[in-house]
Length: 618
Image 1 (cartoon, rainbow, N blue to C red):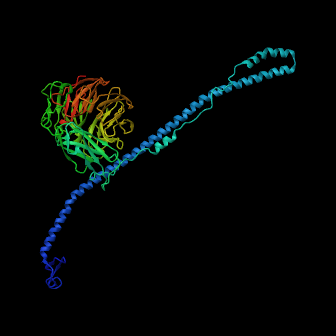
Image 2 (cartoon, rainbow, N blue to C red):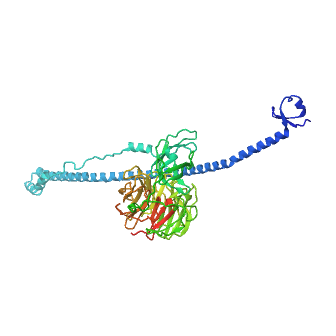
């Protein structure tokens, strides 16, 4: 037996001493033990390297499972929508058919009645003439003088009347009954009715470019161009991809921008930042970071990066504009509840930045209910927090996720008269309904909504949803059945550009804040345009992107003016009345706004990560 004690490096085989004197004589060797130790170490390294991939694989598997689950739920939701839409169409067609058949019967009946009455009259006249002529003929044929005289007396005058009587000899109606059916256009419309919208874009291949990626100037519009690509790196040629963008500090979102779909696979993110500093620009495609995201962004006060100019908080004339000037430290060093020492309309403020009870990260929508509660949609903490009218924390609910009953980005909140809590979930693209205790009940709008921002409830108990991405207002029954919808992207009366929130007045009229059109628009319950007010600027009654809106019992409209960091009050026809005085502790990018049951105004001071309650004289 030959024991292998050496290892031939040339042949990569163990060899015994005898073999070394034979065919391996010229080959370099090493001790077998050394080589085995080396191989053991190398194998262990490879096992470790392979194992290191497992967490990445598990994360990717979970991500794919989530996407598959979402894809499956979207398919089911759209399948349901297709069935219900076509069922509604069938009903509409059947109703129209019944109406047309009824219209035919009524029209036919009216015409037939006229013609039949005329025919009956003529037939009666014909019978009378025949009868009287026959009677007279018999008397004449008999030749009896007495009979002739009697007939002349009895029938003669009647014959004269019959001969001279005006008769309806011309038709008093016609026989036209035609059906006009513009079927061809309708057939074409039905042929093209509905589209299944998707793209093959993936975040890992999608590219971002533009000056707005690294640097922008305070108050100036910056633009980033996003070019979507598929898994092989090929450019996608169609629009409708779901992209989200956020400019933020560790403290949350600081800019409001708009994603413009150029419908050719390219998108623009246009945004404005209102303060200088270093920020993070997060761009996501289908909730996955796009290649290179998050980007580091430097915001300077001027293009040449000169030192920032300071603004006096209460310089002469600044009261009328109530421009939001933030004092250093107000973002992080606020106590839980702060009562205002300087005279303005502030009663108290609640909150700091954080993830605990009574702390917020990018709070958005606000609602108040008759039971004396204030509800806050805490969007980046994926929950709703509930407080008393005096600011005591009551409860919170919400679990982050993309399944029904979970919240991904709650931006709007409203309370139904039955006590249910209605939440617009921007990233899940649906509206969730929870009980007053926070128990999930149902969702609505799935498959229809693209980016719901604000919600409200009208006097019929219908849910009004402001779709910020689709630039459309949807009205649903709480069951999820669509009542109506109106609006499209543009700057016309019935169009919107990134609408935010809604309120309903005592006449059941719907008031919408039209963010990028810098106006407030009022519609009736059927979506017919009634009036609009506001233009871009800093003067009385002007806006720099309006957000939150509420209506008091007198029909006055209270509007959060996001870019000017102030709250304005208008009458029901849109005439400017006053400001709420917020000068002492300025707002910074206010979002949702509501009237509490005790008559105060509550506003989400998003940039300061708190909500504030102000005195309001109705």
